[in-house]
Length: 282
Image (cartoon, rainbow, N blue to C red):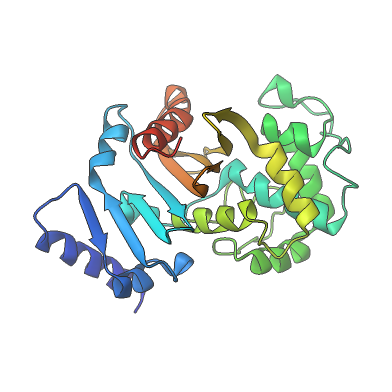
């Protein structure tokens, strides 16, 4: 069954229900609608959590996957299935590929930004992958992209099963402007494997990239994450993806949302944290 038919099935199922705040989608439907996590036994749509977006005048989707329970929770399931430009969330995969291909010796090797004026002054200096991820330095990762090459990206994106795997003809912008796209559901699959060190990448690289993504620890739970923002779409698109590691194991999540103005960009992390808190995850 193609995605259009799958979406129609979901819409039909929703019409037949009496608008509960928590909707369970059956195993067969799950296999048809969410091939990115085709083994999931339980998929839950939390329509009540859309209020977390609405209260902040935001439109978006959210997913969180618990591999221990084999449970995927979705907010705005239709959008969660749609592939969108990953923007700087691709820096996670990009860092792994850079380390695995050896275009840098390690995550601390200083990479030149190119010497040209940049959108943000903070980007106008040479820095490592570690620092580049933390401030989302585009020119530094574009230098890495040039070293990696289109051919190697095409190979690695297939290995990682990263979104649609498309690189196109511009090695410096394919994750910023397209054609590379990935869905919220696909993001959580990728991040779950990274958090569990199960990607087809060396354990060393996965551990190092995970360490870079570490943000904060609270009540024995550690939050890992990376934001993203692209102006290649209308409206613009923002992301916050990552995982929580705590007493209940790994909980990988992904959020994307429309960015109508700069103020909206600040909502990405706030909304994700609010949803995680309501779910008792962080």
